[in-house]
Every structure is written in structure tokens, then in C-alpha cells.
Image 1 (spheres, helix red, strand yellow):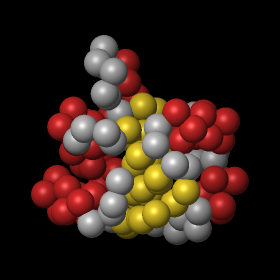
Image 2 (tube, one colour):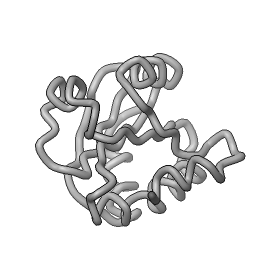
Image 3 (tube, rainbow, N blue to C red):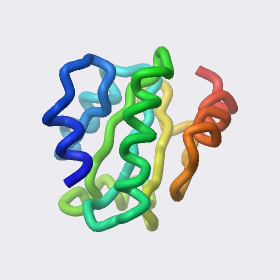
Length: 119
């Protein structure tokens, strides 16, 4: 599994975090004032393609924390945020949802999207 492998090999503080449940999701948002959460699925090809892009962003975008959560087994969160397609990237500022991007995007398009959202 691509996303799990990224976590197992991560030794740097800025790597993408894998969130297992709602409690970890809420803790992640509480600890990170500007956060991107990728809602994904292990069976989703575009999600696997997005994973290394998010890893790169986690190392180059200062002030941005990035996490991923699998939609399987997290139906409460997927319903709460209206996730109907994966990958879905949600951007939070101080715990509040401020922007979303659905589908696979290049690193350059994600950077433009991030710049459009005031920190």
C-alpha cells in the first residue's frame, strides 16, 4: 500500500501523516493551524499517484501540515465533509474548512490552489 509505506519510512517531521480515525483527525487539526487533509482510498489509482506529490509538498510548503485519511472505515468524516469522490483534498485554517480540491492535480496546480487560500 503506497500511503502506508510512506509512513513506515518517514523519519522527518514534515512527512505526510496517516490518520486512522476521527479522533486523530481532530487532534491533527488542533495541532496544525494550516492543514491539508487528503481523503483517499487504497483501491484508488489517482490517490496512489497523488501520494508522492503530497510527500513533496510536505517538505517544501512551509507552514502547511499534510495528512491523509482512508475513506474506508471513516464514514462519519466522509459524510460530515460530503466526500463523494477521491482523492478529495480539504484545506483547513484553525480547524475550519476553507477550501477543497477534488481529483488528481499536479504539484504546480496544488501550489497555485494553496496560494489562493490565505493563511
